[in-house]
Amino acid sequence: MNEVSETALITLRSRVIESGKPNPVINDPVGAECLKRLEPLLSSSQFNRLIKKNLPITLTRYIALRARKYDFYARAFMDKNPDGMVVNLGCGFDTRYWRVFDREWEYVEIDLPEVINFKQQILGDRITFKMIGASVLGKEWLEQIHSLQSEKILFLAEGLFMYLPPEDVRSLFKSLSETCTSSEIVFEAVNEKYTRGIWKKMVERKMRKQLDSSAGSSYQFGIRNASEIENFGLKIKVMEEWSYYEDPDLKPAFLKIFRHFEAFSRTQWTIRALVG
Image 1 (cartoon, rainbow, N blue to C red):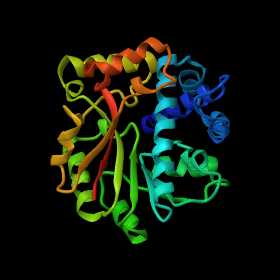
Image 2: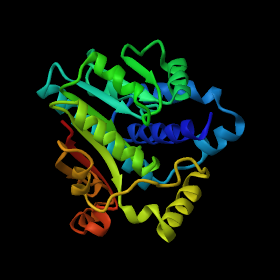
Image 3: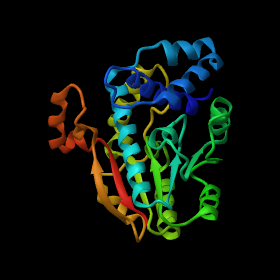
């Protein structure tokens, strides 16, 4: 298992931990099944670092609330567009397909070939949707999506873009705005200051200390504010912003006060935008 897969496993385990609590903020039985099937495939060192090591409650809660919010976006989009499609970029070990609806629906997952192959090995008996093994930085996957449809598509990028080169993220937005119609994107952003200097090093140290892994510890792409992305393509228009500080189930509850302060609420947050 490489670092990309390790990052995906940490996210999966966080959802499973929160799903197993009383009155959970997210229910993820397929995620629990996925984790159970994964564990025997890990080396002893990976098992100790990724499974036995306690994860910070603030991290697992954040990941679960974020996943629930992205589930909501997917469900709302498909309810509004029954003939639409959701494309999950950098899907990792996500189990959104089974959480959003208990029926078949138009859903596509994209990740690096090694991640897709590993996931098919683990959940192949359950997977009925299309999966594409490709880098989101390439053009091939978008061509495959457009061979299926080019309108009414919701692209999800949960915990992805901040790890990619800025010029590649801007190029992706431009491509989406030029080739899609009646489509949206929901993605997680980080403040640009955390991609450089001492702020960048602080994030890297924090992630290594919390996770005992260098996986996903270095941010590359960031923005100063949401409106900045409207310069990435002619048809891009910000529709909504969300911070987990706004979530009613955030705990400890006193953290909700930070939603009023952009220094906190716009450190790492979600943006929903039209892309065509």
